[in-house]
Image (cartoon, rainbow, N blue to C red; front, side):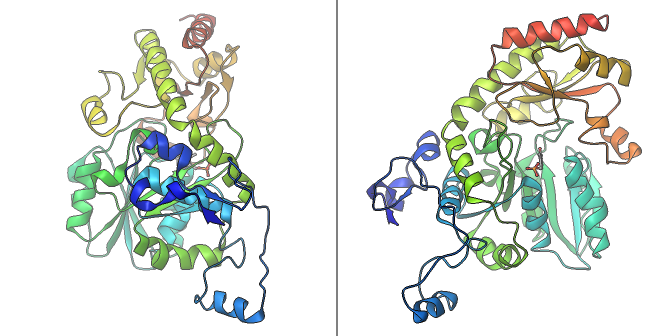
Length: 402
Ligand SMILES: *Cc1c(COP(=O)(O)O)cnc(C)c1O
């Protein structure tokens, strides 16, 4: 495949994010197609046996097998790396494949990990269940408490792992401070940036070493495919991640990579509009329910920090409806427009009850400790007219007597 003339790194380095989202990582075949080609192939053939040998020996450039390389997947990896400002990126089949690979590729028995307490349910399963099973100790801390990170460090601490904003508590962690503490102790910071995406927050600008994604969320953005990505230095991706990734195979399908490439073209537009819509809906709900947790609202405890490290507050927030599960489920059942769905990052407005869905697998005490109570709901605000979403919520609130 040839490179479009404009893909000279000297030039692409100066492109702005909205341009990179459309033009970054655009290899083209001899047909000069305008849209990225979809290479549905598991393998590749060689002109001569010596070429196959040379490629396996790493002496000849080229693809060998789609678990290891695929042209469509590589275009996505280049585009995400450019948007992130990272040296390199490797795509994965899901966000959880990205989180698992980003941690396991660099950890061994005897190591210690410090993680934020408020994490996506499956991420907490990694820290609470999977890592200890392989002799990796973990400590969870309140991610908003900078001193707690420093205090949790042990001589064998290898990794800090956290989300910001966190799912579903909307805790905002101080990227510069926490990544700075990690750096000072030779610890690798791994940030799950699924809620913000590089369109709103680039953790590496604040010192993060590794940034991992569920691309299923805002990057696809239209609820179609599962995907994930891990960004880091070229040294980390090639020497630490690739041996793990190539041999364990959490590889992204070319088709899903192609869908996410198309999704990235509109990421900036979608996330900005959805953030505006979310702010409008959050302002409506504030005062109408017991509490709204949205970093875009002045009432959020880390509002000022969020404004420093995020361009906008994103499409997702949580609220406490007051009461218990009956009120939360009642509100969900009263919705006509907003779907009851545990997905997020979709162009459709979706609402879920974390305690009985996304965080059902977390121990009840751990759920309550981070504020995932029975009356908590999480809302992803989509691209619909926000006034229609507000009217729907208003109707559903009235149906439970609010
Ligand atoms: C959804 C999500 C994940 C998992 O991603 P999948 O693509 O569903 O595997 C990880 N972290 C966060 C913060 C998420 O929201």
